[in-house]
Amino acid sequence: MNPTCFALPFAWRLAACPVPIDGYVACSSCSSVCPNPSCLHQFFVLVIRSFHFRRRDHKSFYKTFETHTHTMKFSASALALASSMLVSSVTAFSVHPTFGRLPLRLHEQVAEESTTVSSEVETPTKKSKKVKRAELMRSPQFYRNGFKEVRKEVEDTMQKQFKSSLVDTLKSNMYTIEKDGVRVHLAKDFGFCWGVERSIALAYEAVRHYPDRKVHITNELIHNPEVNDNLKEMKVNFIEKANDNKKDFTVVEDGDVVILPAFGASLEEMELLNARNVEVVDTTCPWVSKVWNTVDMHQRKGLTSVIHGKYGHEETIATTSFCEDYICVKDMKEAEMVADYIVNGGVKEAFLKYFSKAISKGFDPDTMLIKVGLANQTTMYKKETRAIGQLMQRAMLQRYGPTELNSHYVEFDTICDATQVMPHTSSFTNLFLSNAL
Image 1 (tube, rainbow, N blue to C red):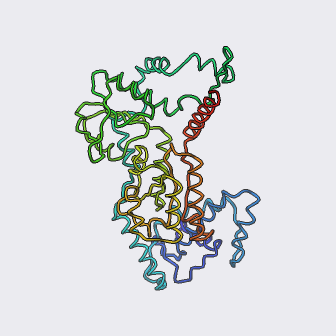
Image 2 (image 1 turned 30 degrees about the vertical axis):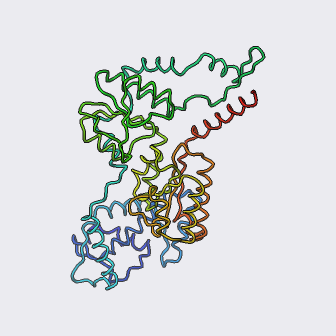
Image 3 (image 1 turned 90 degrees about the vertical axis):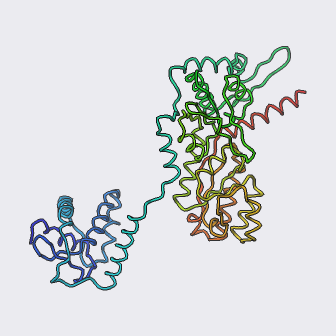
């Protein structure tokens, strides 16, 4: 027998391989009988996994093999030797004509597996929308990190526009100041969040970096009139929507610069701009990108994305462009309609008519609400998103039971905390002013 094969029968005995005599194969190097390599593969997978166990778990690992006729007792050096022998010699095996054949049932299984593998190789994998976006972002005409040569100038400009000595005084004095019998309180979360500051800075830097270019923006940079007015004063052109509610990109010409706002842009818009000779400056908030990564994970797991958001909002439009199957719910009322359909079914035509503008093309509630994942528009209230998530979870629990819940509902945290504290800040300010008056 070929010395490179001697460890294999030894390893096979240790694993107490249940394959019958007909499962033997012959070594093409020496024509000696060796056990089926597929069983050895399973054995070594189990052994490798055992190395991840802690010392006190070793007994349970060995115990799993006590039902076999052979007891597994081997040294680390013998195992390493057997592993190396397997790697070097397993490719040398072929079925020998003088030995028995595999049982018919096993032959059929092997044939099925071979057909499956070949069909998978022949069918190209569909490129995900996340991959498409990543390819667009690698373009030399795509910028996400700003322009350092004008950064100091932009920082000074933002300091003048958005910083206040009075606000600094309030913050340094426990957010309170009193003068002439009047006490003023400042909310602790007053001001822009990091994502908004980043978007403003990137947009300002783009304008200064391209002083001789025409600069466009696909929508409001953020929901703040002062910031958007500042951009208009800088001669930034806000792309308008046509009669069909689609943006009119005919105004964008070769050599122009296009800014993508903090809410992001749809995949279709990114592809359109990439096909033109324009520079793209992406100011999308990283928290919005996090939502896009979540819906991509939904698609890879075969889930329909239930998006808590307004289907006509710029951010939700961008998010749905990265989905395959989705439905948008703007509030608890619409979420309850979806949950009721999951549990009880309903009139499909009426359901589709109501959500006609908030669903993916070809949406079928009978098949696409079997497995769902939750995501949200980052500007929606956390409390309501949590409630919708619990509602979806209860619906799946009622329909499929506790053992199947995790197969039918998945939830990831895509809530931006900054959007939660700002409304509370406004409420506090309004309440204080109303009481003062």
